[in-house]
Amino acid sequence: MSPPASANAFPQFLHEPFSVLLVEDQASVRATLAGELRHVGVSEVLEAASADAALQLFKLRRPDLVLLDIRLPGGNDGYWVAQRMREAEPGGWTPIIFLSGLDGDLDVWRGIEAGGDDYLVKPVKPIVLAAKLRAMRRLRDMRRRLVELTEELHVANQHLNEMVEMDPLTGLVNRRGFDRILHSEILAARRDGVPLTLMLCDLDHFKRYNDTLGHVQGDACLKEVGRVLHDVCMRPRDVASRYGGEEFALILPNTPRSGAMTFARALGKLLKSRAIAHPGSPNGETLTLSGGITTCVPDDGTSAETMLMRADEALYAAKAQGRDRFFSFEMQMDTIEQRQI
Image (cartoon, rainbow, N blue to C red; front, side, top):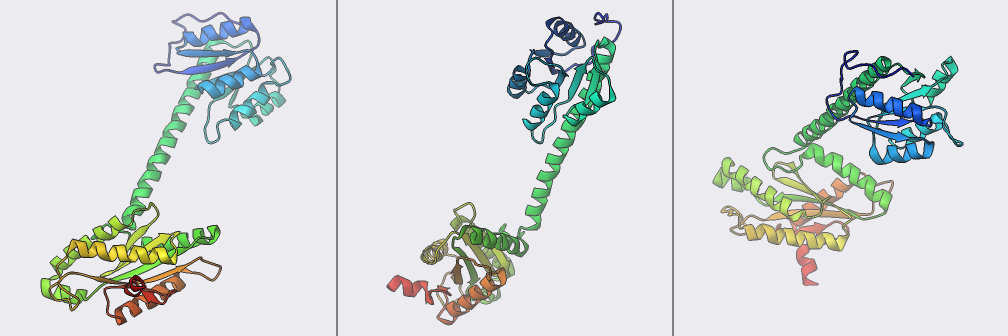
């Protein structure tokens, strides 16, 4: 092994913390390599003399780079260690440089196949070792930056999707987002064998509201209704959406028929408690809404279209029976009738 080069031979290039796991069974060789690593600026040198010790240190300390001798004591060689290291970091990447007195093409090929990134033949010249460390450090930093950019892009795409699927007036999910979520929840409910409830809601006599108070006040009313629907959806997967105009839709996963009727009554009471004035309503002085409910455990014949048709039919029945109520398609009963039972 060549003696460590002087400080003038090549400068230290590692100005930030950088750790290397050195796996070498010969103590004298290990000591020399450790000295050379520190000389070029490696802040921490972790040393292991066997395959088991190397894997334990790798998993525990997560070094920035591994220098791995191929020939190790016991039944496992460096190729085996490299494979286990790769298995221990799915999706990650730690540079691995093999060390060996062997320099045949087959040895190089086996090292790369095992998960190695480069190959050094012993004895290692200090300036060559420094150059390899520099190259691996550069590759590692480039990969980390690529991962960061990928994560930033993922977050940006999430925000973009949220903006695309958000109704700008009410802040609720828009029709596009509603269609996607309803389809997804139908598949999930079918897979898990649990009930799914869909509600279509319509503000009663809202045209009269706009005719009486104007469209600016009408928009303010829609915003307030959006806040009410947002507040009533307390579970993480409950979704309130603006279906269109003064129509809203609620997707309630894992909600049976009785629970849906209870939810509907609570929604009606909450809206009345906000006491949004509606001077032109035949139903009273405050804003009310009507709703259609459908609940099922989805099967192969269930689709978003069939659930929307049932909810829309139930909404029509709620309006026909006087408005200011919810009607269940499956129970053929509205919230006022159920309350009287």
